[in-house]
Amino acid sequence: MDSSLESSSSSNGPPTRCCRTCKIIVIGDAGVGKTCLTHRFCTGQFPTRTEATIGVDFREKLLQIDGEKIKVQLWDTAGQERFRKSMVQHYYRNVHGIVFVFDVTNQSSFCNLPLWMDECRQHSLGLEIPRALVCNKADLMSSNASVLIEQARHLAEVHGMSFYLTSAKGLKGDQVDSIFMALAQRLKSQRRESVNGRVLECRAESLKIQARVITAQETKKKWTCIC
Image 1 (cartoon, rainbow, N blue to C red):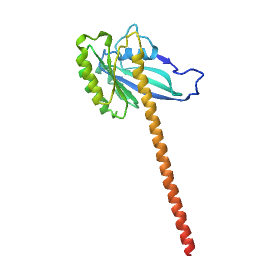
Image 2: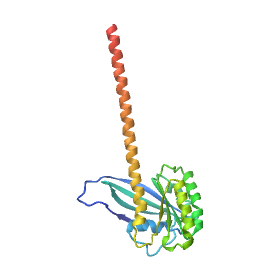
Image 3: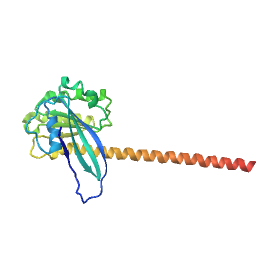
């Protein structure tokens, strides 16, 4: 397990609020580069050697977004079913974000994406959970890959996913970083909207209670005057 901590703001900036944890699962066929993507994001380096993931590979990175610390946990599962059965329940528990990955040089890995999406549905991961679709190994794509890429863009649009064409091995890791940074930003905004919604609900309920109290007091005064 690799772990990396990073701050996106200087120490002279505003004080940061308490840390919250976001669990993002990375899904796709075996060999599409899931481990390389998570390793590149957390360490800034492409791994010198990789082996097939057995069970679940776990990495995390600490970010600062708008003065709030967010610990991003990346859960990278084995693409092969025989390695996943014992871990699948833990893998899909308390998920905040999903990254689907396919290999641009392997069309079957794209064709299998609906199966991975269906597995998410089977484990009650609804469309309210932010998700991204990543077309990986762009450094190896051939000239006739444009049709597959357009199909992937369309799939992402239909299902409300962000789309990224990237390479974990590329000289610049900006695109890899943007996949997970954008998800973390969306999760932060989503949480703020949820909190604001609860505040408004509490205020509305408070006003209702105050109205009932005033009504009760006026009724009491009325009966007092009659007596």
